[in-house]
Length: 388
Image 1 (cartoon, rainbow, N blue to C red):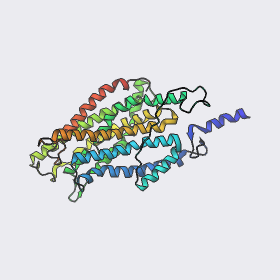
Image 2: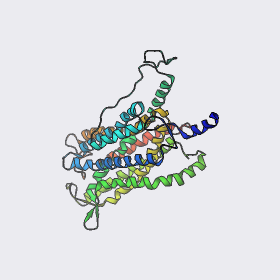
Image 3: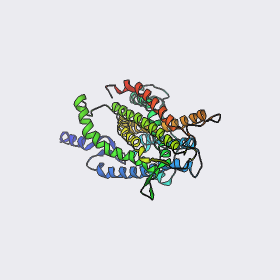
Image 4: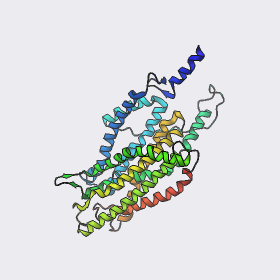
């Protein structure tokens, strides 16, 4: 009788998953849409708050607080970087102590209270000693499993490091893109003006519309050529997204050059608060291209950092993925600060001059496009790895 019941019990238990009490998760009594609705609800609320702050923060810093574009962009990048680095701490707590369910509940309460916890902790290997008997030793030895898990995490760092430039590029959508839009004609009709920060919604709309196209059209076509069930590998997917990100930077530079030419044509160079007679719709292509890049790169990197790590450390894997955006935001702020000091010294006009009609953020976009192209060429050996 036991031999007949065992397969049913094994089939009902979800491998590697536990419920909120730490017991093995069973399909018949846990999971499903009850859990999914909870996660979706929390994520929608979190995205609403985060995107609302992130898309308007550059305007608040340069407006009521009177900061320069360079300082405000660096501050926004620092804020976004801190926010996306904190999951490293949350992953450590989830995988080592509280579990994912309790961690989500606790972090959601902190979010509601408006507080941020700012420390993160790594578990470093003091010794890579293999203890043949777990019941002996002074507690400093690592088991074979511990060492293999450490190797799995460390093996992700080359990909993580080469993806940081993508994090730098993505930081521009909530800062410089928005500042471009503020100076342009945003009117619809005679009375209504589109808020510049709302243009970020085109990224989300593009992602929603393009994912079905990717799944239903792109993947089957790619599968016919490669024979892979997923069509292309995870790293190839992120590489394609990186290409669209480069194109987005090129288009951004060209549009900004056009905006500066229009400002000069109408004599608005020394009138920073005047509206440049150029419709804000010119910016939509760079937002759409950025959204397509996200479909490829964001999902590709998520899958890579999730599936290339042991099940017990998958929270750490996803937090490493998010830290790409966090570290990238900090690096973006650092890069902007360096360029501001370099190009704005000795009475010269900075690339990030507070008068955007005299600034040259188009040069900055070209710089990012060039660096991204060089990085993409260096990434080709990783993207062609057959095991990923």
